Length: 276
Figure (cartoon, rainbow, N blue to C red):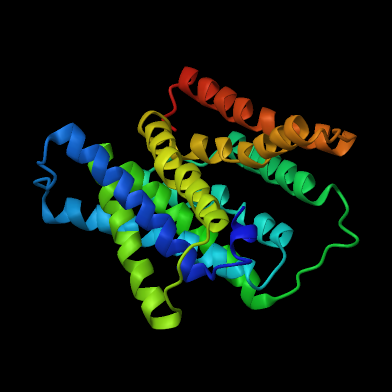
């Protein structure tokens, strides 16, 4: 969907409308829920943490969309799915999570399954096309790894935090559009595309992601994120009637079993009395 929207809008315009719609939706929800009391009383460090989350979520979307302007969607997706690995890496210093062989195996299975799913196992015709685009996609993955771990540290109200994060990202998108692009009125088809990106990535996406981070370790959530391309494949099969290949089946097995592998490791370490 991101690639399709970028056919009519540039990355700055997409982010402006995507985050802008998100800000409006969250503001309406908060006004209804709090009856007008919308400004929380937080300490400076709490504000700085949430503001940093807003910066990194903007950087993720901005860098990924910019990479899509320079490299094919398959290439950008492959590099983007390095972010579960960065989630695990940053969880070590930020949350003091321990790295073990089960987590490493889980990451390898999920990453390999994702690569096979995206490339269909055809590596002979695949090549990296643009170094700048590749670096942008990898930087986006790094940004999401940092964003995930910082969000997990945030203990304030989830709805208010999400509103502030989205507002910060929208303000950065406004600055980017004013400096490097220009305003553009949305056509109806473009509006539907941006609305879908907003609802799936921000409104519903943030809510589900933040709830999951509240009750699970960052490493486990990293494994679950590999399910995204698999879910996409299921929808393609159901809606478009495409048939699964044996490569798709192998990819699905690797992705689906990557999470149980890590859970088994947690159970084993817990029985041994090791903190993970």
